[in-house]
Amino acid sequence: MIQIISTKPYTDQKMGTAGLRKKSKVMMQEHYFENFLQSIFNTINPSGKTFIVGGDGRFYNDIALQKLIKMSAANNVKKLIIGQNGYLSTPASSNLILKRHTDGGFVLSASHNPGGENGDFGIKFATQTGGQCSSQVSDQIYANTQTISEFKIYNSPDIDLSQIGLYKMGSMEIEIIDPIVDYVELMKEIFDFNLIKEMFQKGFTMRFDAMNAVTGPYAVRIFEDILGAAKGSVLNAVPKPDFGGLHPDPNLVYAAELVKIMYADDAPDFGAANDGDGDRNMILGKKFFVTPSDSLAILTDNYNLIPAYKNGIYGVAKSMATSTAVARVAANKKIGYYEVPTGWKYFVNLMDSKRITFCGEESFGTGSSHIREKDGIWAVLFWLNIIAATGKSVEQITLEHWKKYGRSYYLRFDFDGISTDTANLLMKDLTLKLPSLNGQKINCFEVDKAETFVYNDPVDHSSTTNGLRILFADGSRIVYRLSGTSSSGATLRVYIERFNRDNLQADPRIMVDELLKIAMDIAEIQQRTGKKEADVTT
Ligand code: G1P
Ligand code: ZN
Image 1 (cartoon, protein in one colour):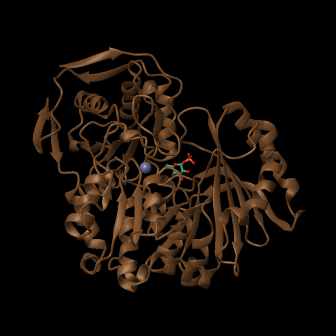
Image 2: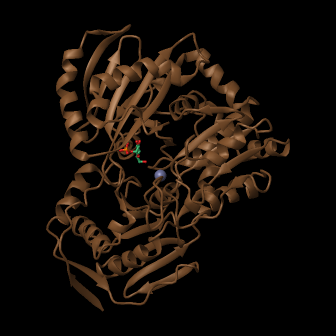
Image 3: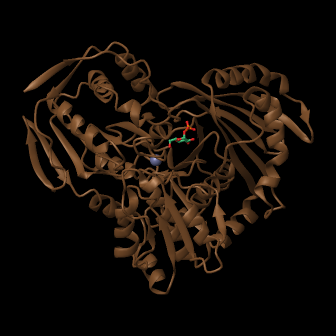
C-alpha cells in the first residue's frame, strides 16, 4: 500500500519567520507540498510518533490535509489527532500538543495573509514544545528539500474529516476531535469567566471580528454562548476558504468593518479582531485603538487581576522591533525582561525555562506560557477580565497607563513589493553605514547606539541577527527589518518609536513624522525603491 514516488527538489522551500509560506499556486505545483513534508519527516524521523493536525480552513487545506494524512501513514507515524473538518486555530493546536503530550503538530495556514487560489498557503511545523521548530531544525529541513529524490505516500481513499471519532489508515490511528472544547477549558482555567459573564449581564457590549477565518466558531462558543455577549457580537463568524475576500489581518487597515463600528457614535464598549489562524489580535475601545505594544505593557501591568497569574509572573519578553513600553513595566515590577528576534519561536526557550510568562510582538501578537504560540482569543479575554475587574473603559485603562509610564508613540511602515536584490543591498549598505552614526546628532535626536541587533539565546546559546536599530538618547528608536513572511518579493519594515512622558494624547502619525523622515533619509529608501511613502502603516 505504500507508494514510493520519485521527485525533484524545489529550490525555494526555506521557512521564514513562521513556517513555509507561498502563493497558493506555488504550493499547488506537482509534489511541492509532498517534497516539503517528506523533508520534515526525513529530518525528524516520524516513526512511532503522534502529531496534532489542523488548519485555518483556507483554500487548498482540504487537499493538503489528505496528502499529509496519507504521507504520515506511509512514513510510519503512530497517530494523528485532527481537528474536525480540518480546523484548528494555531493556539488550539499548541494547547493540544502540550495537553496530549504529542511529538509536535502541523498547522496548515498562511496566518494573516490572504487566502484563495490567488492568495497564500502555508505550513507551520511545531515540535513537542508546542512551539514552532527552531531555526536550526528548519535549516536542516531546508537542506533536505535541496536533495530530496522521493517521497512516500499511502495508497488509500481520502479520510472523511467531518465526523468526530477514531479511524485507521493502515496501522496509523486517526482521531478526529472537536477543535474547540480543550481550548475553552484552558481559557476557563486562566480567566474569571463568572466576572466577565456578570459584566455582559449588566449590558456590556462587544464586537469580535473573526474575519471569516478559523476563530469564528471559537469566538461564538466563548463570547456568545458561554459569556453571554449578545447574539451577533461575533462578526464574519463562519470560516471561508477565501476569507470572503478579506485580508484576515487584524489591524486598522484590514479590519475595516470592525473599525467603522467602533468609531461610530453608537459604538459598543469593546471591539477585537483575530487573524486567519487565530494567533493575532487587535484591541479597540469606543473610538479608541490600543497598539499591540501598549497592549502587552498594559496586560503585564495588570497581571494581578487574572486568576491564573495573580500569584506572580516570571518575566516578560518582546520582539526587538516592538516598542519599549513593556520594558518600563518590567522595570517597575522588578521582573525579568528580554528582547528577542522577530518570530514567536524565539520566546519558546524563555517560556520553557520559566524566564518569562508573558510575551508579545508589535505585529498584533500577545501571549503567555499557557501555550507556546501567540493567542488572539486569550488577549481578548485578558482585556475583558481587566475591564470587568476594574470597571474602567479601554480608553481609561490606557490613558492611566500612559500617565504612569509615559507613552511610546509607535508606528510600523511597510514598503511592499521591493525586488529582493534592492532590499538586500539596502540592508547591506545600511549595516555598513550605521557605525558612522554613533554619537551623532540628527536634528534634535542624539544617536546613542546604531547597530545590528544580535540575540544570544540564554538557554541554547545560539546567536541570531535580526534587523538594524538606531537608539536615541531620549528613548526614541528606529528599527529596520526585511519581512520573513512575504510570499513573493521583499517587504522592508521600518518601525518608529518616539517616547514622551508629558504629551500623552497627540496624533501618533505626527509624533513619529520627523523620525520617519530621518529613517527614510538614512536608508535612502526613496532613491533606492522609488517609494515616497510606505504602502501600509500599522
Ligand atoms: C511577521 C511579523 C512577526 C510575526 C510573523 C508571524 O513577520 O512581523 O512579528 O511573528 O509575521 O505572524 P515578518 O513578516 O515581519 O518576518
Ligand atoms: Zn496568525
